[in-house]
Every structure is written in structure tokens, then in C-alpha cells.
Image (tube, rainbow, N blue to C red; front, side, top):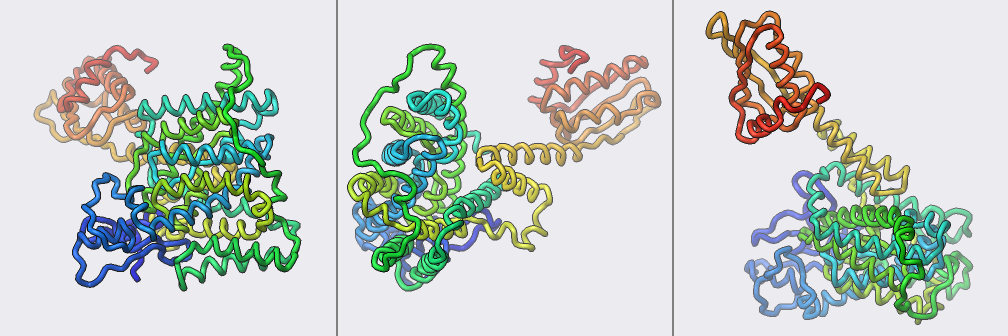
Length: 563
């Protein structure tokens, strides 16, 4: 059975190579799990046509005549998944595994925010179900997250839980506005090195978040975690009929029950709800003062949530070799938070660890798995709460450890890669990782990484600017040529590149091989003209392209000494 090949530049985990029919080889041959096994693969026969291979890709083995997919992102539609028993089984089991992994996380985030565990669990249900309809990235999991919990915790301490609900609703409204205004297009300004740092930092945070469950516990927890990891590594080599994480959870739970072993379990993390969430209106004064109180927290939740969600969507695009609508995902997150706030939930965004369980470990590809993750979560905690409560935390720790291992981009830290990669790119990746791990906030790490990348890029481009004398047609004329990109970082030194005293009475500056990008450069050109004029000499600037000339004509002589 073939497995996906890495991309030529080694970017992102799980990226496949193009197949002969224009699709993606990783999508055709299946989903690579964290342990290197392939889930849901259907090897094409030696004489299969491109259409037959496409049918395998979308129906996962069911040989039925279907037209070529019309979906622009090349993914699997919900209808196609419902027609394929094999694909549907993958989606259902993936949703169940994710639901089990969500429960302790949601409870833990509720504790961080200082609220009842039910708020985190209800938020995970409403976020997952709502985003399965509204979101732009199929198979991505949204639920209550630590990032939103950290932002909202001070509001809960100072004002109470009703203000939290109001802030979550307002955060959703802000996200909808930002989404419709096209904020998702800003994703193009996030460099690859930041993305790699984001992935690696995520893997580290997933791993370190499991360490508290391994401290001050009975010794039997450690072999249980080892057995769980072994199951997830070895089982896919024998069969992929059921997700290995689900087998590990069931097996370790059965061992604990049958052997009457006392170990930390899900029930120890907090009380599970016994009733369904209900629609409510936040009990807060509808006044300008209330808006002033909740607005800063709502803005923080909106920005952090969008950043993490859009970064996660881009990561899933890379893993699945399919596209997604980032604009729809942005306003879809807002809609999910609005619904969550009115149902008394904590609020949230995309959950990267659970998304990797769903997409990479379990092989899910459609909205069905996201929807079922929310539904199963509610059923598990409300109907089967007593059963879920006995699941050992060791089983869930083993699952998350494998997720962290599979998420980390190991290629990025190989000695050969580090030797080949420019130091500036490595510095951007490391700054993203360090800031994220230290602050436990992925948004901070991404922002710092982008700023470092921008600074290093500006510094590198600034050194490519050059001033040379190209002609001296007569004793009264000297011609200079300026090459490179002229902006604030490169133009500041431009004023010192001319011989104001020694040059003749007329100087020509040729900018045919340069571009003027900002007011700083226009101000520098004004300063050069002023210096020559103070010595009774004239300057002629030639060769400006259309945009540079328009910018100079608009700003020249109007910037003043302060600019």
C-alpha cells in the first residue's frame, strides 16, 4: 500500500504529491496516521482509469458510477460520505473518538475560566454542531478552548458568569463582522516559517498539557499509557477497521473496570451534566456601561479565536490537500459563538489537537464527523455519564501524546534541513515556538513570528538597494542609477550615497530599476533635492514607473521636515 509523499519543500505534515489525474496522491491512497499507517486507503488496480481512481477517492472503495466531483476544494461531500458505508464508518468513529477526547479538555478549560464544568461541555456541544453547518473547513473541530478561557477568566472573577455569556455573544458578532469584511485574506501574510513554528509549538503544548495527569499518580498509570501508545502504533499495521485511539480507550477502560484498579479518571475532572442546555438571554443590564465592560474581553476572544481557527484551517488544508473557505470559516466561528452564548456556553474556537485526532489520526474528511463529535459529546455526558466517568485519564493521555508526535514537523529540525534553511527562517520558527510555549497562547506566538519575519525581510531587502554612477556625459552632468526596492528601511541610507559637494551642477538620478513604496522614500528624495539645491545644483529624477511616479507626485514637497 502506498503512502503519501512529502511535499517538495517539506512544508507541513501529511502533504501529498500530485497524482496523474490531477488529484492528490495522499487523498487517493488514504490518510497517514501519527504512527505512519494509512487509514481508509483503497489501492487502485493496475489498469484503473483516472475516473475509476477518482471514484475510489470519493467513495473509499465502493465501485459505483459517480460523476467527477464538482466541489472546488476537491474534498469529499457529505452526500458522498453518506453513500459510502466505509467512509461513513470512518466519520462516525472519528466523531466518537473526538467526543471522548473533548470531555476532559472542556472540563479543564471550565476550571481555568472559573465556571461550572457544564459551561465548557455545553460550549463544546454547541460550537461543534453549529460550526458543522456554518464553517468553511470540513472536518475541523471547534469547541471550548483554553485560549478563550484565559481571556474570559478575569471577566468571570470581576463581573460573574452572566457577563461572560454576553461577552461570548458580542465576540461572535465581532467575528461575523470581521469575517464578512474579508479579514481572512490576511492569512496570506503569514509566512511558512511561522506556520511551521505554529505546528511545532502546538505539538509541544499538547504534550506538556498532559504532564499534570502523569504527576503524583499510581505507578500503574505509566504502563497503561505505554500500552495505549503501543496499541495506537501497532494496531493500524494489522487493521484499520476501527480507529486505534478508540480501541486503546475501550481496552484500558475495560482493564480498569475488570481489575478494579484505582486510577485518575474522567469523573475526577468535574461533575458531568445531567440535563440538556437551554436557550437563555444573558441577565445583564442592556446599557453602554455593560458594553464598555464586556467589549475588551469580547474583542480578545474574537481576535484570538479567529487567528487560531484560521491557522488551524490552513493546517488542515495542508494535511488533507484540499482547500477551504477562510471567509466562511471566520463568520461561521462568529455564528457558533453567538449560538453558544445564548445557550450558556463558555465560547470557543477551533481546537487544533482534537482536529488532528479527527483528520490525521482517525481519517475524517467531512462535516459529519464534526457534527457527530458534538452530538456524541452531549449523549456521553448526559445519557452515559456514569460510563464516561470511569474512563481512565491514562487512555486519553496516550491519545494526546500520539497526536503531539504526529503533529510535530520533525523534518523542520533535522540537521540537514537546518543547514539548508536560511538562519532568518529558522529564527522566525524558533521565535514563534518559544513565545507560544512560554505564554501558552498560540495567537501571541503567531503575531511575534510574523513581526520577526517582517523585520528580517525588510532588513534583507534593504541591503539589496544600490546607487552607482553610470554616466558622466559632460563636465556639468553626472548620472546615478538606483536599483532595488525603496521603502523606509532601505531609503534612510539613500541620502548618504551621493557626493553633494563634488558633483557637477546638474545631477540625474535614474530610478528605472527601482520602486518607490512609501512616504519615507519620497521624503528622502525631497531631502536629496534640498541638499543639492542648497549648493546651487539641480536634480532630475527619471525612470519612475507609473505607481512610483503617482506616489511621488502626490507627496513630494508636502511631507515637511518631520517626515
